[in-house]
Structures are given as structure tokens and as C-alpha cells.
Length: 115
Length: 107
Image (tube, each protein chain N blue to C red):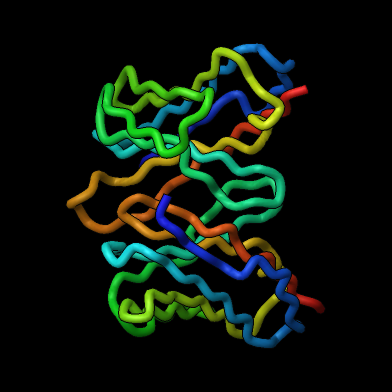
């Protein structure tokens, strides 16, 4: 069966520090991968999605970046965090487009607090 | 991002009543429509999805899709206190989400 792992679960970082969140998927090949951010009391904002290794689409220009060094690994990074980067970050995967319509599967999330 | 809009609520219903959640979307190219439930501090979990016009029933849940009106809804029958959560509407293929509707079921 497919599983998705996301870490760290919680982190507190000072303004201006770097960030690295990692996500890996097991049990499937060539998944579509997504990073979302959810600010307190808000909906899910799509940040990045990827349809393959090295292929990243950015939805919201900001100080975050994403990379996909391996088929089932997706990394969210920042060189310098802002207070506004605080939130609940969710990694997710889906079957590639064109195949049977499927759902989005979420990791357990990473709660980031920038102080 | 393409717009997906939901009434943010909060929506309160008594236990046993029908809860009605609504969602509109702007992209006529949207293919499939998903309803997720999210408990506080947790990841969203799928309730059901729909891609054809009409109704789709799964237990106490019914999703309704009207592509001409760009409207999708979720009905929860016999609402239970455990249904209290935020309900998120999403559209594919891009998986854009609405802001969610907070539902409280009062015992």
C-alpha cells in the first residue's frame, strides 16, 4: 500500500533562518507531488506541484522553493524565513493525470512557527 | 490560482439534522470535485469525490454536481457530533482548494 511520510512534524524557527521540509512517498511510482500551506483558520494554499523529477511548478511567488531530486521525494525550502511563513505545511500526492481519477493523499503535516 | 469558493461559516446544525455545504468554482475545465474533512490540527481526509453531473451517495453523505452552474455541494444526513470539522472543497486536475466551511453539530 501507498504511504506518505513528512517531517519534521513541528518546528520553531527564528526570522531569517533557513527551512527544509521533506516528504517521501512509498508504494507508488511517478506520483504527482504537492506542497500546500494552511495559515491559521484558513484554507489550503497550493504552493508547488511536480509531475516528475526536476519538474516544479510554482503557484505563488514568494521566498519558498521546492525541489524533487528523486521520483518520490519532494523538498520545500527557504533561505530566509519571514513571520508570514508560519503555518501548517502539507505534502500530498496523487496518481499521475490521465490515469484513473484519484484523490489527493496527504502527509501528516509540518507545523512551522516563525518567531 | 483558479477560484474555489465556499461559505466559511460557521455552520451549526442540531444532531440528526441535515447539513448542507456548498462550493462554487470558476474554471470550467475542472474535471473532478472532492470533499475533504479536516479536524483541527490534522490533515484533510477524503470524504468523497464526484465527476459526473448529478448526485452521488455514500452512506450519510451525498455529493451533488452541476457543471453548468459550476456548483458542487455536500449533504450530510443524520449529522453527528463527530461530523464537527472543517469541510474543504477541491477541484482537479490542479487540486485547488476552497477556504473551507466550519461545521458544528450540536448534541
